[in-house]
Image 1: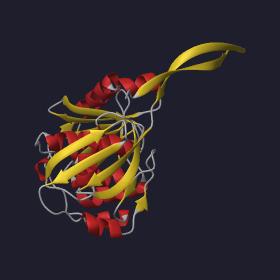
Image 2: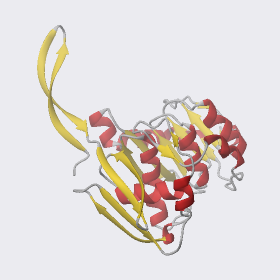
Image 3: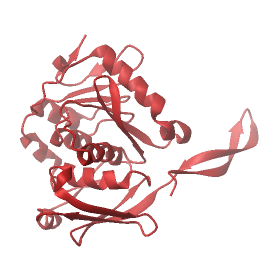
Length: 260
């Protein structure tokens, strides 16, 4: 299944109608099963679904690392993802708990009260970066996020290390894209505490929680951060920088991680 499809539209320009063919983002439904338990049905861009499943389970506190997974089967035709772990998880307890609808574009859902994130253990990462690296990384994301550019309807998220892109994902939902890059890193057995998360969309509380739970201490956005995200970031020691342009940005929290 392709992430975009061609569609004919009528463009209004200069007081006239014109026919044009554009790229439309595809929304696909998938139902996630873990050890024969149905977890939830989600909408996503149909790529990197395996990584999305792993990232979601990890950032929800169900698994800790990629090695916890025995097998993953993705059936795009039926919209089903089957995940098997080698040991018992806390998923049954999670399923009985209250769920919270997030501000994610594709109707994200989390298993915990976002306010409980203030109880997260402070980040251990000592990562600091130069401001010019932050600007360069945003430039890299905007250059390489192809679907974001051609469709105008997707979000791009990148994990970077030592000035270079490591993983990049695009999705109709910001939180999905975050889960995809985190899942990719976990499946490759990589630590995330020395990586920077770079995003085209705003940094919301659920994105900050996903990053912090994974050990990511620096988040960079082309747009804004929410009040709750900034509050949690201050508590756990994460740095959020937003509105990155050619040579300017806002640093919302823990500015000492970005060197001038």
